[in-house]
Image (cartoon, rainbow, N blue to C red; front, side, top):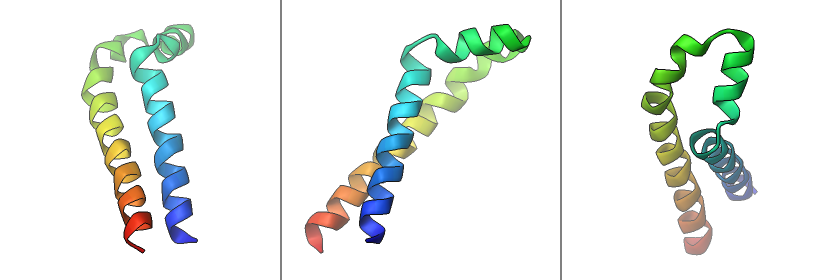
Length: 67
């Protein structure tokens, strides 16, 4: 069961990070709230987070296949 939870967390995290990286959802939200000064730093945070969630997803799939 732990493998399924890890897989779900990885897939949800990957989907959320992909939406924030490749669509202007987060940019529009930050501009609306008044935090447009930090838009330039989003790539520094979002791209590594996307990579981490993709690695979590692959690890969960690998662990599921081995077990």
